[in-house]
Length: 410
Image: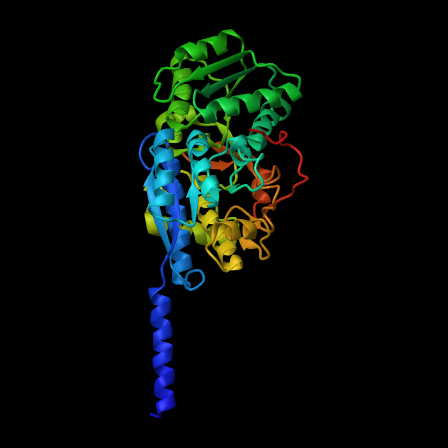
């Protein structure tokens, strides 16, 4: 072997070793992995893990591996704020994905904004989340879930227009999520000329909804619109069963949570909610995602606890990876700029993201993308046969899609 060939071989080996030893790209993953919100948080985290593993096996991003820095915020605002500071100051993450609970996002994301580190909300839906910093020249908060200004009009359209109910009750939890969602529902109802006959509030961990349900029943409610999370939503369904009063439940996407479906049992059947993803192999991408997820995490009954959270978590990592690749950098401002001007479409589970963001629009999902799901046979299925028939046609972002409330402001 000649000296030149030897030197070339050594150079190649050194280059390979250097690439292998390159510092990983740290991405924070924040969500509730314990407690009542955990079915969303764990499903999101598993979707994120699946995407990161696929990307790493394909060579990573910029020749570097993705390293996930996972933290359990326990659905507590103060814990989320502490984690945000730890991820920034100790772990030095280049971006963060997650946030399940709107209140935790509101309490935490200001730290990333100040540090100029992009946040990809992949589950939280409070309309205000991407508008907290509208008064600042740059906004580092993005989202690839269907915000409540989209969901609330869908819920109202389903109840009032499609199903013809006139007397509506609203039951919402006392968190930021529940009360912001309740306000969006009331705005959407007002646009239809409808005033709810009852508006009731409950707390996280409440197990008896009798008082709220009796007020709704006595007011003549024909349907109950909900904003809450699985365990308490199940108590609403169980409370109706106990009272012998059964009217339809139509609510935000969280009616699809496993701990609603399982805890409500037969009383939870028929509940309807907007969904960006239903666990059906309606495209090749969705089929491969479902197969990989079930094989990797082996959930009970082959049912994801929260399919929406898993799919959106998965997609959020691919969106960030595409931005880092385009930016050619892990610098926060450069990643943000790349997200706002993605040149290459990103094929996701929920949709194909073709220019999903711009400087003035940090919402990847528009009103034409979600469909209605229904709890049936202990899982979520398409509520309408026509949506299922057309599910192989990927719904893509349409900024002119009708049905959303005006953008929420801080």
